[in-house]
Length: 171
Picture 1 (cartoon, rainbow, N blue to C red):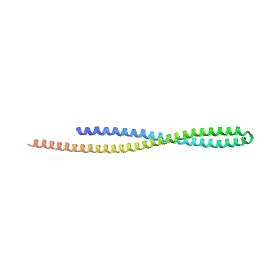
Picture 2 (picture 1 turned 135 degrees about the vertical axis):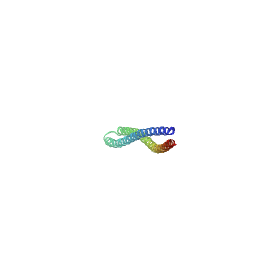
Picture 3 (picture 1 turned 45 degrees about the vertical axis):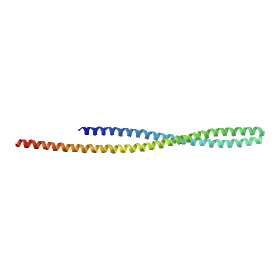
Picture 4 (picture 1 turned 180 degrees about the vertical axis):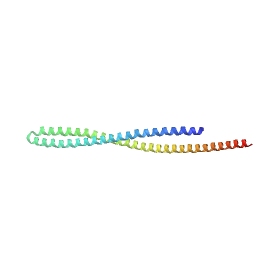
């Protein structure tokens, strides 16, 4: 009977562990989904930044054209100074956007690495869950076999006792 209780306790412990693993899997799945959304948002931010870079390039080209037209109307020195300022401002803004773009790309790489890590972790936990589930089934089967064996032994003892009772009454 002690073994049966021990097996029952082990089965309860394994069931509790399974519940914990399922809870952990839910948490990790939610984290993976959240990270996927963050990665998507960061990709969208990069697209917006790339659009801004393109817009700045178009604006730069437009401003250059306007300055060329002014050059024909105004003094050459003033126009060249304005062109230089526009180019420098554009170069500065472009450099800032490129830095931000690189940072965003690095963040995406970091999020993709986290996503990969959590995917591997989920697979590992799924495998562990399956293994524990099989182990619980094995313990359950052992318990049922042991219970059946004990029941059979008790039945044999009962039959022997009844036989002894009958034999003692006959004597």
